[in-house]
Amino acid sequence: MNTLIKVIEAEEILTIIPLLTKLNSKTPLELLKERVLEISKNTNYECVGIYIDEKLVGISGLWYSTRHYIGKSVEPDHVIINESIRGQGLGKQFFRWIDNHVKSKGCEAIELNTYASNPKSHKFYYNEGYNIYGFHFLKVLREDKKFY
Image (cartoon, rainbow, N blue to C red):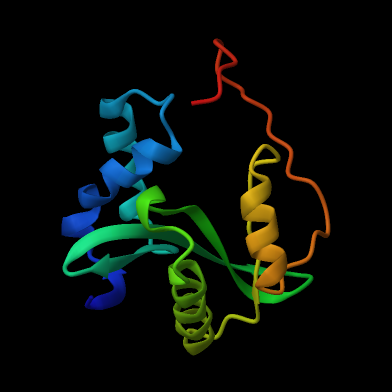
């Protein structure tokens, strides 16, 4: 089993769609593609992937910013590892790589959100040294008030 973790280049960004739809099944596919293409143009964003035998099996977007309370930080976003290979230590390996990658870019902290309905992810992040410091609130401004 050959494992590779790397930054996914903008011209390959749509390769994340099959994994992203497992995480985000409510957003219409064309809208999801449109959003991913728009996100990939942002200079404060990059997407990293974990590949096994050249097949993309995990992704995480990384949003970089500077915060007054912690300095330069990164927010892993849309983190997912293919369900069929979970429990093999790939998440730990992926986040170890992310830690080193963002440290090399000068990050002083990592902040992330995880859905309240996903207790397995909570356990994973606790085990990786993350602590809960607050709540994430969302207000949908669109007329339909839907989350997608």
